[in-house]
Length: 460
Image (cartoon, rainbow, N blue to C red; front, side, top):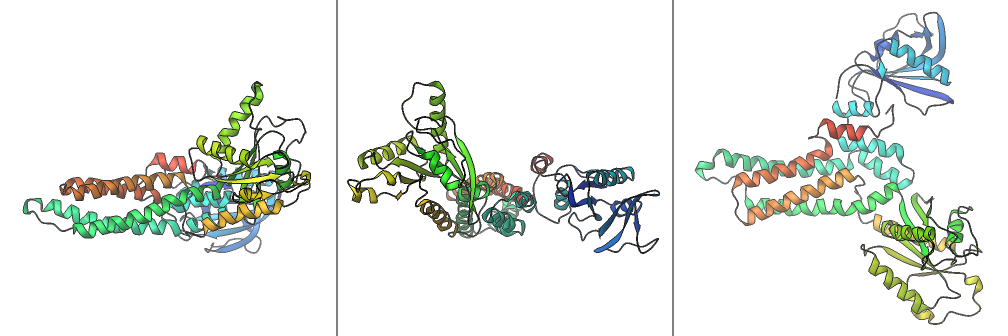
């Protein structure tokens, strides 16, 4: 996948802006740029690394723009190659002309993620750090930013490398036993290996279990708003978002399809999903909407079950919650009962004590009363979970590799317990090492790299 030709791309967002940055990388990057750049201070100059030069981009005698040109000589650059960044004015015409001049002087347009892929191939980043670059660019909240930044700085990959090195040490001893198989010598202490495997399983399980939270923090925590028709679900969504996002009507069944929008609450992104009212319906479109509601309930991490407290009994609420639990596979979902329409209450609800034993928040969505209690409750639950572990994974590729590693370690433990020969243990050790190496890129292939970097933006 890799060659040392010179690549170029617009690094800033396309379109008109105050300034734009064009990146160039490759063995001939500095030479290509020097052919179209004229210093404002000197006629000729020898470019020094990590210096910024002021001058003109020109095509023979035609001046295109007044620019700043930053020089980075290999290996001290983002890609590990000779690299140049041209800061020009943000005219689309100027951007196009500079790109044309670079291409005419030996460069080619970079593929998506090619700069970061070269950084990986040149040892500037490992594969998990390279993936974190894309996550950092796409981060939309404090939590998703913190996750990506920690991974890009090596917080996660350092753990993986340490686990892999410990396993590699024992694997070397097992391989040594195979060289002396005729002498029946045991170099690898099986008790020590069992202790190591137990430690590895604890650490890997911790990382695997962190994926559920890490993934939703990265993409936004899904919160489904459910309930019967006309209990105020759409009004609640509008009140939380503080805008008229959903149509509100006294006619039951107004919401036929799910409506989604996001809200950042103190650095955490929540994806709120307003769903169709749950009731028996013979109307085809509404029935489809109700089916989608159950799908969203299954996908959500938190469920706001909205009831009209002026008309709904405690027994009905409890029966509904039990019914939901029977239909939902994931029992870890958090249900919060939203007792809406308190503005219509003329007296205290019956069986209030039983109601308070549930997780209930009393609100008036119409008057926007106590909406803050909902957002506070959502935020508190996430921060409580988040505080339990500093290192989290949010990448499905990493999750799958860790899961396969854990499976191989379990096989090793079974092999040791049953006194299986060393050559078979060595196979499972290699499998575990392979899957750990996949995470950081110590073991990889062109197909994996292609799938990862094709999702990057051009210029990164």
